[in-house]
Image 1 (cartoon, rainbow, N blue to C red):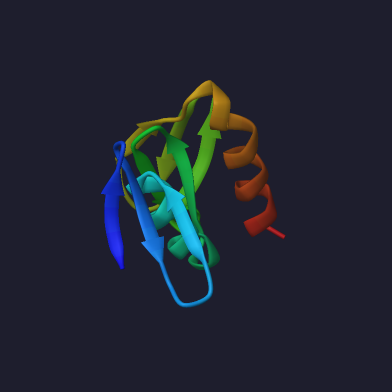
Image 2 (tube, rainbow, N blue to C red):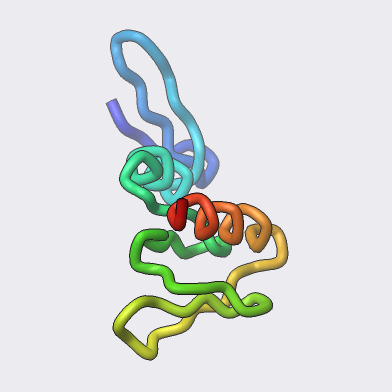
Length: 85
């Protein structure tokens, strides 16, 4: 069963109950595929990221950029370095 309680999503299975925001739930599902949270409302595929310059994330083969929140800079930087090894 899936329902919304107090602006949070609640997913109940036979074995467990998972609660959180919709973004948190999507993040849990996509994290094993290389997606990382860059701010309160965005997930990006770290394998498409090129580099992090300050708080600006650039992507491979495009001029697209995204701003990374201060809270997430360390994790995004770590993930970029990790994929290069």
